[in-house]
Length: 304
Image 1 (cartoon, rainbow, N blue to C red):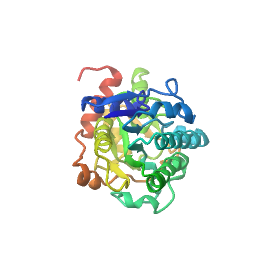
Image 2: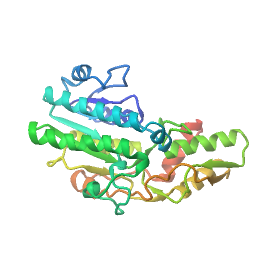
Image 3: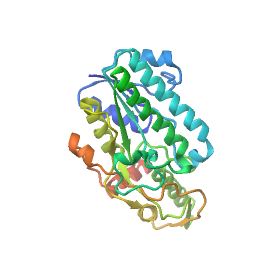
């Protein structure tokens, strides 16, 4: 297939593009706005016009810090890019579009493990709601386009992703790369403590980006019969304090100190992956400890 991957210069997108190339597909890797500005419809149409499948990974995304600082920008850019991709695909009769959503779409209080039918049981957690609702609007748009135009739109919801090539930003990165960067700085500065946001009592479902890419490639190749959303997760609920302890050991035992600053976000997260297994036979293969070792080694350029 000829597969256009938007955001292939970003974190998840590069994994998805590589996975599809390994499977033998002709991949058009959209690296970012310097290639095609997805906030405009016409260049987006040019990008997708000969595609068999479009995988929409491009996003303006980050951790709690970015969500708190730029809620309006997060909603506007993510909604606009997604809308243009779907409309361009409709205009050129692209057979299938895979939209990458976010676990933030789920309500603040939700059952554990979280199943896809829980999506409409409440409002997302306040700190990440603008980004979540932008992605959720694309779920609704995809369902509408499937019904009216017959466009096969799939909505994939990965849990908290991590791995090499992530954004290791102490202020705006996701929890794992942000935490690794903070411990690395503390070690190089010979500090004995690392201040961390939140309370450490929240839980998250950490999925290696390589595992997510396999699941997304499965959806791109085969699709689902109903277009219903599909979770990709690790099947493991991890306390943020336990995550900090593990990373601390990798940096010689520097002590993590949770300051309580900035919201914990959603109190608990673990996605059910039963649907992914039932439909595609997909299951994660990279354990958290091994994945963290590889991610830290990549960041520090250590030999494993």
